[in-house]
Picture 1 (cartoon, rainbow, N blue to C red):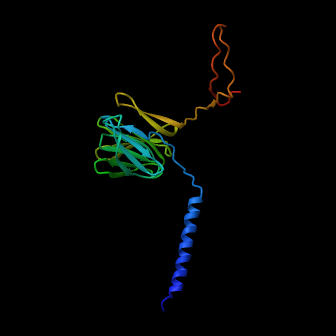
Picture 2 (cartoon, rainbow, N blue to C red):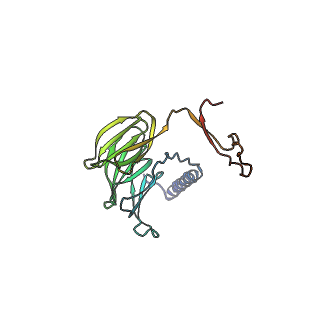
Picture 3 (cartoon, one colour):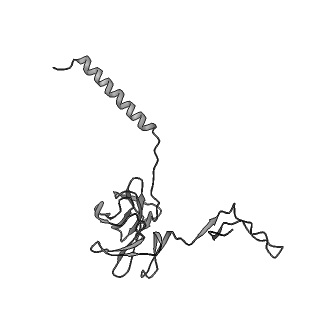
Amino acid sequence: MGRSRAQTVSIMKYVITFLFFVVTMTAQTPYTDFESSLVHPLVISPSGNRLFALNSPAGRLLVYDISLPTRPRLIGEIAVGLAPTSVAALNDDEAWVVDALSDSLSVVSVSRGEVVAVLPTGDDPADVVFAGTPTRAFVSEAGEDRISAYDVATRTLLASVPVPMKEPRALAVDPARGRVWALSFRSGNRTTIIPSLLAPPPPLPTDPNLPPAPQLAMVVSLDDP
């Protein structure tokens, strides 16, 4: 038995009222963005013609043509994994993105405008750099306390090396591209920082004609009284 026109109109009113209520509540609900800690969210390709930038909350890689540095031009916006924290450019067309929350690497092709490979990593990957001959991709895995190496050509895992540090994150490569350096987020060296506002004043200069030294922060031993 079909509904009358009055019943249909009444139902539509209820539906519209409900949708309006949902939209209003959604707009008024506060949103907290738990963005992952960025490590290397910006990088310029080796040729200097491309700028790769991460939009971490949106899970996207933005690609700019900077062949004219004073007139950067957006040429691509590519979806990657969850909470990207670092990007490294192999060349103008290929970039590797560290997806911290996805525990993966996204290999991006600019010309195709998409992710062409997803490589699984250990827990909480943080950074990626290229080094060595032939070229390897080195990835810090903070949750595993190790560095993993990938073959760039085959995109396969070569080795995972435990490192004597807590939560390795940022990576750097020496000018000869023969060594990779890792920075520990929690080094355990038992030091702490005293902010400049709380640090003791510096000693007065021995030469009375010199102005007093500025107030600075200090790095001291953790159990320094």
